[in-house]
Amino acid sequence: MLSVSNAFQEIQKSWVELSGPQFLDETNSLSEKEKNFLQEQIKLRPIDFQPRLRGEFFEYGPLDLLLEDLDITEILVNGPKSIWLEKEGKLYRHDDFFFSEISFNNIIERICQAVGGHTSLNHPYLESKFLDFRLTLIDASLSGTFAALSLRRHPKQVWSLERLMKQNWCTSNAAFLIRNLIQERKNFLVVCETG
Image (cartoon, rainbow, N blue to C red):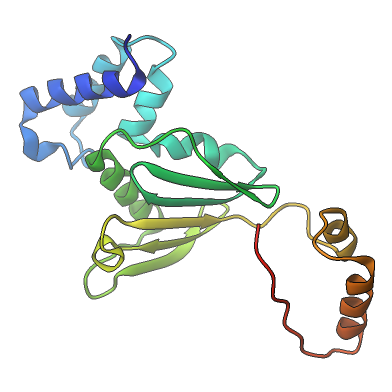
């Protein structure tokens, strides 16, 4: 049975036959002819595969749907096969992935282009605003494997002590203590697990 990932591999193979392997990592600067070739190849695949394939070649691949979901407050990417998301304060592993290391690197480069930045050996991290996210990118030279990406969106609904108590983050006694410390303008440190 053909999967979206297999369809991607087929298109990539056709691309190599047309352009040679050196062009695989240059999908961010394609000519119109090359873009048209990829678009035509995508149209030959099952219709339900096409949005995901377009995402992998021209947009943000497995991140596209996550970026649109307003309930997601954080997206963590630790490599082509390791994508995590935070929703309602809980961390989940994403069931989708980048179809190849090349497309992963291309999408990371696409994100860098979108924010007008880059990473290098001299500057192995990037912090910026991307869409409605705070972006932190660590270069592969620093992480030791793949680039690591963190996209953090502030939740639309601000946290309050009442909301935190409903989430079992603290007891009513702890909330009372915290409220008093804030009113008295005292410094304090909260130590607990996240998520």
